[in-house]
Image 1 (cartoon, one colour):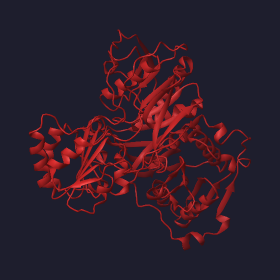
Image 2 (cartoon, helix red, strand yellow):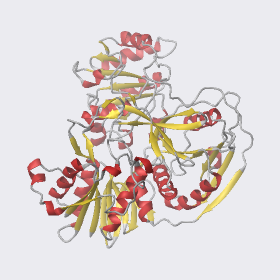
Image 3 (cartoon, rainbow, N blue to C red):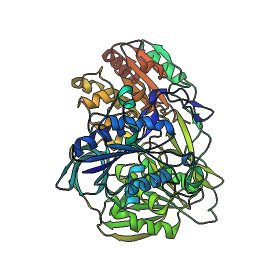
Image 4 (tube, helix red, strand yellow):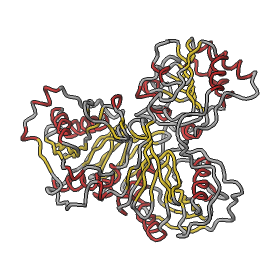
Length: 592
């Protein structure tokens, strides 16, 4: 087998810091993205002694260390793609450069990437690359094997797993639990012969000035807002549940800037008459009503109509949109990409908002690559500036909010369930929506089995106003003792730290953190979790954080608004008693 591996060098997540809105790289420890390390380890194991693994890294000269590390851990050779002309390249330009470099190295049976990059939390380059190379895509893969020219994998879905098969060549992404990561010591990296590392510049790959870098990128980043973990949190600590609730009530409005998509009055109809499209994942169950309402509010503020783009279930958006575009037939992302691109090019909507599910991310990335338009991955807020919609996303492991605009005719953005809270705009009652139907032919080469081990509550977690997160300090046999607290708080299903998910105590779909889900509910109640950086980064944007831990030195107290020191069983009983005696709970107002 001949396998291409993509690897990226990033600042160590715990050392990422910003100054004046810029990521500081000087004197910051750099490392290879952990998902990419797994991609390399898997590729080396699959290729064996008779195969070839070629690692591609795009970055500054320092990124050669990443190439060396992957070669030291078994890759045949590496290619460093480095040129000052590449500076500022967004995901689309990055995918174009990588596709060109891969094509010039000859044909590969498999292109293996990480699920996403931890510095920008972007998981769209892999599917964009697949579209540019004209290949099927599978991932994120929890298991991956090749049998007689067919890749067979178990892929992680938003609510469970599915077995998939695809005839090679293909692009695949590595999930966190695919395998142990490749890691090499500094001495092992230094021992890699220079002859095993090739170097490519923009000119080497045939790019002209202006075709790469910031100038060619369709998305532009505005002024960064720092939201460092723990920044602005009260940090109060007590042993009393009653006092903790009083402290929560006494807190001023949550820190932050108003980036809400809801609220505000409608403006006159935009002169260009272009609509806002909401593209609902037809494979993931019910539409998130909060997200749909937020899209409606956003559209009204921009003076635009809302078009719901759905599969067979028109009822999912009935009564909430001004028009419906229904795609009937096949449901794979690569089935939809050609017909929906034709519709988008013809209608030129003002923006298209996709569900940030595995399905929605792949489709959005493929559309962006096919049309050459900008894409914002996992947007968490939207603003309207001079009639134009601007998307905001979390970056640098939750330490910043970044506004991103697009020079493309249409802004494309994916949005996680639960990231936007909205209510219907006052007086906004759409009439009977006209329906346009498009038949979709099956062209996908990927064969999916039905989803198994589904977590039916996973989507509800993203929509919850309050989330209770448990760590290893709570035995799974005692989770039932948290039911009353969750009911009194109106909380969603239990969420988990990585160690809890790794232990199989709660599904992987409930894992919160850098390598899990990111949530921004009004209240997070953390119970029995130490609160290390990789975990707490997953709820840095929450309105309020209440932490419970028996260890007074637990890291979770450094990021909480209020901490209760004590045995969680006692604290939960006291919290329940206090909440039962109150007319309202301690849920704060939504974050501004």
